[in-house]
Length: 292
Length: 176
Image: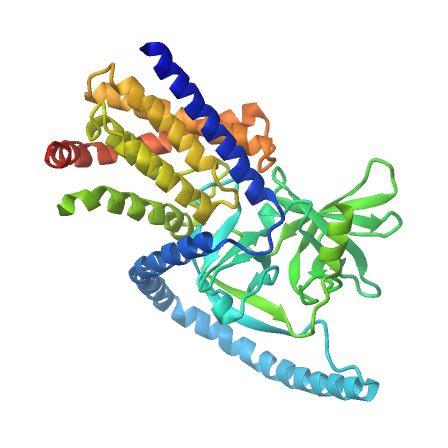
């Protein structure tokens, strides 16, 4: 009875298609937390990856050490010459810090937007699907990681926490930022920082788009962009990148700057997840919801 | 008895390694301008379809659905896409295999076909939900072709390792 078989097959395809649409719809909805099966799978896979990562990282580490040894002498010379400069900078730094604290206390302005508590994490895997710029790190809810925290390396910001599990979390890299993930940022200039919003990533030029800059603001290539700490949960002063190009938008009301991320988004092993010390009020999230 | 667990273990191992490879390989290799995506799990699933499954057993389909949803959960934030693509492709190959002999040429052709179909389905679905917005031509040149080449190399590496074993396990498990 071929017709019966064909009917069965058709129904099967239809049902699976409906299931697909339902699942996609379910996951595209703005979710503040993952379901428990997802968390369970993430954590289990994460543990296996951690186990396999240990020997590999050991080998990588040893190799790097051997390479380091061969260039030790030269580095030592350079470092020695830097050390003397460093000492004086450190003293100056301490002085400034003290002064800053005194001024703060006299102003009764205790908490600062720039302060944060870092959580160290190492990267255990990255998404094998290249259209998702995600990676998995080995710190989760149990270590105090929360959704939307900023993730940085020594060089600068690389992304934010997209979702958390008990012991692992998923980080969304800057290259995967869309319209819904905005960062309030400043173009750093001597006298007055220029405010803008980072909205989206341009795949072609491999740079972030800083939009809604005043049309009369003067921005030059090579200027640095840092997070402003306004709205959202990111602390202020995290280095994001460097301006490479500035364009007027089509109506001439605002400008868009192209920003090359300061941190290497590909070779990442160790990251810091930063939690702003100051209590947060999610301005960014609420106004996102309003717009939708 | 323990042979029953070999296949799921191999698949799980590759699932885990797919993501680790992306972070362990040097950036210049894994992240060139080409969007090479590893489909190691799929390659093994295709081998299972051809050399393990009989005409009336559907182990490969079961594994395709299970590991498809696992990839969705672990590596993407949208559920169901890999599960659907892997499921449909393996079901199709399972049907095609009934008409063909399981020799090397057939295996290579089926594997290539499977990878192409999967990539096309992933591209279609991800374009729909706006995960990607690259035009069709650039998809062809920067993603589809490099991905096929990379995964076929992997296929040629695992083919001699797994073909004989899969047939042996099939004889032990499916006939008992």
